[in-house]
Length: 289
Length: 165
Image 1 (cartoon, rainbow over the protein chains, first blue to last red):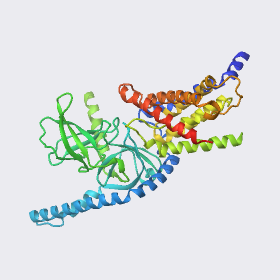
Image 2: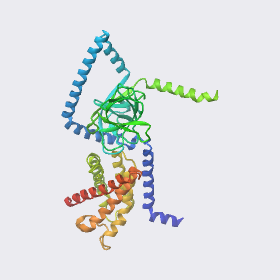
Image 3: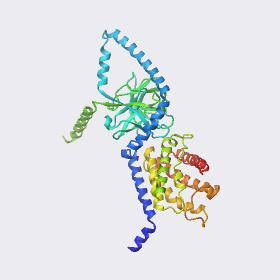
Image 4: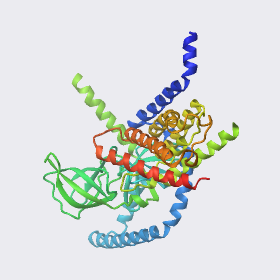
């Protein structure tokens, strides 16, 4: 016993080393499975505050190009809306129908504006931190979009901050998308490298589309409403197994200068997931009948 | 003692913030990232309690992790460097050196200081990127990250050391 104590006293730093390495390993493995605690990410309060201040300073310097970009986009959309409204009015003789439908569509979603406080585009698995958390109504698995298109999905939420898995996360991001006006769908995946390009996988072989077609969210998952812009088809490849198409999509969202985003909460999610659970329950019960 | 703790705490904070706000955004050729906080471990003086070295390094690693969303990777690698530093330091300083000798280029001479820094930085980058990526499938990226980051960190470290009084 005496020897043991003497041994421990002499080599106590080795013991401490082992303890600290075990602690690191626990953190490492808990996080690697993307189930980590919110306290050990940039969503915790201290890191969030520091990044928020930093982002506030940085965003000040990028205000004018951002404003320019947004007003251009706004102008373009305004024109499109006017044209479409005119066409719709001519066809149906009902000039208020679009506004009615639009309001109904928007009232289904709960939009929470947020600011990006920390962001990266140069790793294989990028993460984004925003300055809204559970206190503002953000929940896990909500969709996040910005003025120019899709951003990602909420992954961890603390009281005042949340971490988002953006499209630019090669290991965790898969978002269901479809080709506008054609209806064919696949899932969006990013393989690292160029932050302006992602790939739409699993598009069926019989699908008809052409280069330059727009890709948008499909609305099949409960995360995004249908029609949120994703990007434009740039090149068409065969998938490695030859069973489907792989489309190279030029993203409309510029992740490298992301400042203002919007978290999209779908009020019908609870209803949808309840229905889904009921279906799954009835399917699992069937073989016993 | 209290002054030493406060001093180290201040350096720890500065290095963490510098890493989080500046160096984490620098990627030369897509891989070389400066990891200047290794400096903290390199300049721990001779004869500093080993358990304290380990604890300091672990805390620094953890705080860097917190900001970079890499829990455990920097903490684990820094703790290893904290363990190695006293042993490696003995290799590069004369036996008769004072028991509480400070680590600096002026006291050790450039050749020995650079060797010490290069060795520890290389081991750090090796362990850190292995833990962070946790797969060697893409060994080209892994290799270039380790070598690139070691070089850029070393360069920054020497620049930092040369302006230090």
